[in-house]
Amino acid sequence: MSIALVWLKRDLRLQDHAPLQQALASGLPVLLLYCFEPMLLDDKHYRQRHWRFVRQSLHDMAQQLPPGALYCVEQDALACLKLIDEQLGIGQLFSHQEVGLANTFTRDIKVQQWCDSRNISWLQSPIGAVIRGLTHRQEWDKRWQKVMRAPLAEVNVEQGNWLDGVKLGLPKGVDLTQKEPSGQFQQGGELAAWQTLESFFTERGKNYAYSLSSPALSQQHCSRFSAYLAWGNISLRQAYQSLLSHWQTPGWRRSLVALSSRLHWHCHFIQKFESDCQMQFQPVNAGYKDLPRTTGVRSERFLVAWQRGQTGIPMVDACMVCLQQTGYINFRMRAMLVSFLCHHLAVDWRMGVEYLASLFLDFEPGIHYSQFQMQAGVTGINTIRIYNPVKQGLEKDPDGEFVKTWLPQLAQVPAPLVHTPWQLTPMEQQMYQVQLGHDYPEPIVDIKQSYNQAKELLWQWRSKPLVKQEGQRLLARHVRPKR
Image (cartoon, rainbow, N blue to C red; front, side, top):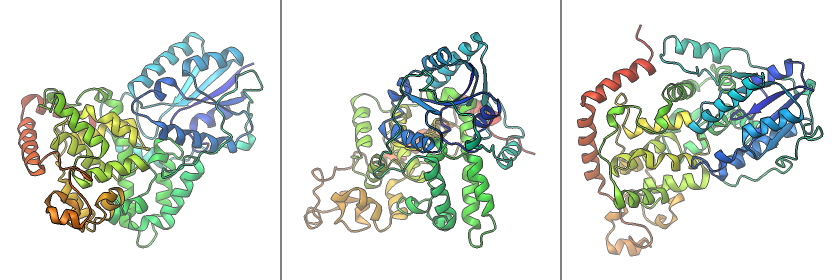
């Protein structure tokens, strides 16, 4: 016997799925596989919220497939592939390429070596418009448009020659019969993705361009596609073509243009990571290797306060608590969190990058590392942005609604003082039922002073010869040539 095995990773859907389409066209019996790999279950980038979302996604897929056609197991991927080959015989292996962490890349190298030793054809389809091993951006934007406008890889589930892996000898896998509740987190799955897409284009998205910078309004009016794109409940091409189908909707153009640019950025940043994957471990610009950072007990104290949402700066703390409880915060506030850690606290970006990834339900390695380094100011080619969290609060949360939602101990403090509680007199603290140092911490830094120090250091470092030299290398690799 010989089967076509579709190895699922971050592509948890049944439509616009090239590997599945190819497997069904192979003429072989088809089995879908997902491995909850111990190396990822134990990885600091992930936590339970991610695996719940994955299980919800797999449950949604299982409801659309014949029993046993989707085999899920908690096991090392290579060990599982060997078991399936031993029991059923793998004629062909299909999957998407994975632009992931170093551990998944190392695993894929071992899988390829095993496939070669067994004469198993492993066909990997590209993710979006990302090109493996790319060293330049010539014609990249043109290709992106071509890929995004190409016909979808349609799949007819009902006509598939599906296999029941368990009945044919595979051990019982992970139980997908129960649908897990999400609480305050987004629900995983292809159905939930399309419901979110539909609600955006029929109602929520009209004010997208005017709401995306607000931490409160963005919860409703931002697309909220990101988790579904990160885990592949919907493809980027499906999202982009849905956007194009609404392009002529009166009154929506500005919001659709803004969303279109962000869908384009999605592949752009993942491509950066694919082309410079060492950025998981070191600054992409080698000139920042020795950038002075806070060290010792002081850096540990700063890091813990930032992680716990106890910095004494309300906008920073509210964003962190919101992330802890929902897995989502809008882009500007994510940038502010990184900026505060790396600039105001001068903590090395590597000390916070895994923790923040573990909070983002939509954690996508390529986007996360590219953006984290950009906001940390260690690329040498991007605009230096040092966010003032008080200014962000006054502008993006003028009534203090967001801060008071996630920091209820400040609920009685009126705006604009809710963004600067350290200015409260003892009598005002008593009046507003908050005691600084007890109910809410004093600020761990003077943000005016920390801003000036960071600004001076970053601009001084930017002029160093190695930073400039590395900047030219990065521009040649990641920026499209001028016409």
